[in-house]
Length: 301
Ligand code: G3P
Ligand code: CA
Image (cartoon, rainbow, N blue to C red; front, top):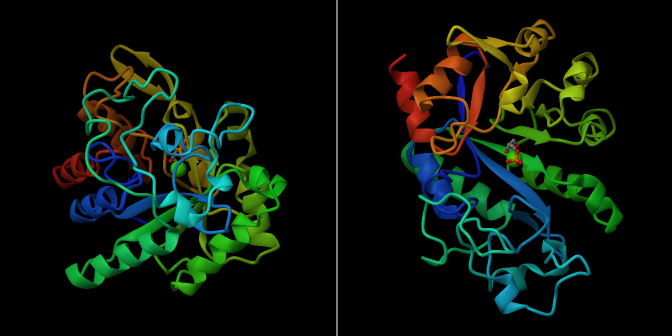
């Protein structure tokens, strides 16, 4: 993979509620290179596209099924069948304790008519749009919480790999990048389940950045939190850790997360943030809630 890639993080989630088919269609229209799917299993083993194992911060589950929460007060995707999940309304992300919308200026919470969907439905949408538009936009699925699923007696990884294979995603040439935060599981995907897909090891904690050599034995790339690439700012210029160059020496691509025009942290503009990572730090792609802005930035580079 030579060109810098734009990964639509949970779809065009800066504009429409995350992981809805509407947000995925918009990302396709915006010409993202890949569209992301976070995956969790339902009670009846359907792979559902949703960010968390919980339902209560993006749906009306607490109103529709008030008595179905667990002892920790959370509602779990895995406790509901696909048919039950389809009765829920999906909304812009909010804090279930306060009801407050997470990103204030995004799509208004509670508006519209959005539904949960399966991985198969999303792949059919993206492949259908590829056919009707002549584009070749890829998918970037993430296996969520494999240990949790295993404890619940579920084989999420095998189920996801089977769906991917059924839809033609089998090798590194098939426009699919499979990601996971759990390194043991991603290693198992390569070494025990013999997947030939392009694999990306997600990195959450700083100490994991020291394990690149090990990751390179099974993965093709890493997906770090972008802060792990930054070290300090001197005279207005950002300096970097050795993460990107260390990864490149091992032939690992680097796709940091998550680039949000409405959550800039230490950056004065989204343009500065994109310049810092895509040009100065030389990453190979970015996860972004605003694919249109990154498309336009790269076009004008
Ligand atoms: O998967 C990479 C990116 O999505 C960051 O992780 O927590 O948003 O799934 P998360
Ligand atoms: Ca993800």
